[in-house]
Image 1 (cartoon, rainbow, N blue to C red):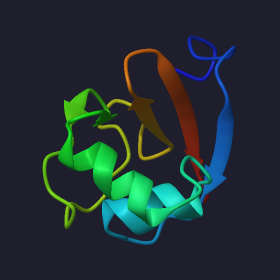
Image 2: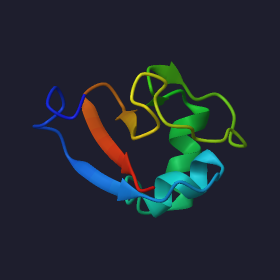
Image 3: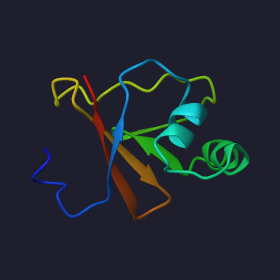
Image 4: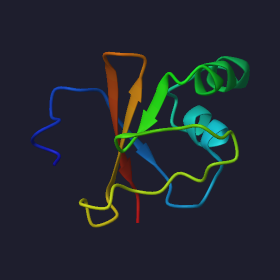
Length: 86
């Protein structure tokens, strides 16, 4: 999975459970909570191929990555691979 997404931006994140807004801020995918909430509400954020619809959703690693990666799509073309630290 890491080789397939090797060209996209990569960030390291902790493995603690957080709601999606705080997780996106901690991963430096968004700079402000307001913008993250707005994009989630407008349906512009996808995590592991599933559109995020709730601000209270908990971010989990991708099921095919053995708990090591989260794939985030912001808008139509901006992807980020988050490596979960064990």
